[in-house]
Image 1 (spheres, rainbow, N blue to C red):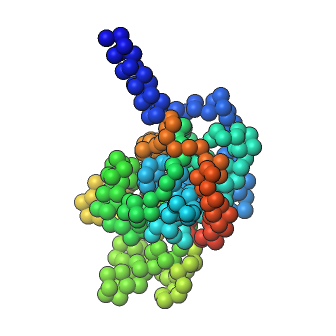
Image 2 (tube, helix red, strand yellow; image 1 turned 90 degrees about the vertical axis):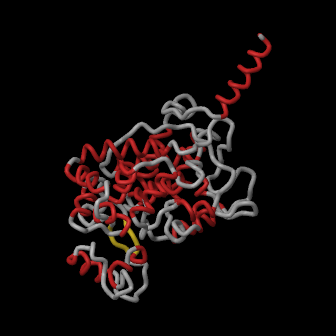
Length: 346
């Protein structure tokens, strides 16, 4: 029996290493300044790009919804990788990859081969919210980076700006997230920008009858039509939050109550008849503390979606390619700089 129990103990120990739990103290000994380094790079980038915080939090969202929080989104096309960056929810819309690479370079200089790109995304999301005046939370750490990407799963899992409430709930439910998580995480649209192409269908011919979306405030409609003329190019940008564009606050929910939600996937949270999300929107609109607490809790919950830990995956030395590969490192940075829509589908 002693030998048997010894064998069982070894097996259990191996399992615990492979599936280790995330911990806020994971880098306390190996890279104690990790959060300060990440925040410093973001703060510097925000001086010339006030949209960068919204872009970085979106990267974390869109990463976690595909294979879990494993930095698979950051991988460029290579001989063995088909990048998730070409998915419908990402193509020509993700940005901030250059800033992620700058963060990685700074961390490699200070703590070589230590901090994963998946953890960089998690820390960057929290730092971006704090820098915009939003809540802080204890970021759980210890994720490792995937060796693969999944374009098919990205196309399947990522909700879009025209998603119905039913679709949004389904996509979130797959990730173990409920209606409160959906409404709270949608509050990330309290800052950032979106391209006309993501909402122009609401302005002119929403149901194929030549009329705009009836859930869109008519005054706001007139403003948006000035920004996005009919049959023009869809690359013009406007604020996701028309009141406080670069501040993380509860105004996103007040906008929904006035039918001033920019994306259809925003407005359905309040304008879908009989929806349980309406009461949540009303609560967050009247109580910013409740929103901040729920947002922080939902971010922690989302950050725990299927992370690689222990000996799974790897710690990439560059975020755009697996170690030892000749991934298109600079290609990813260049394309990120050219992509202009900081719209989040979450």
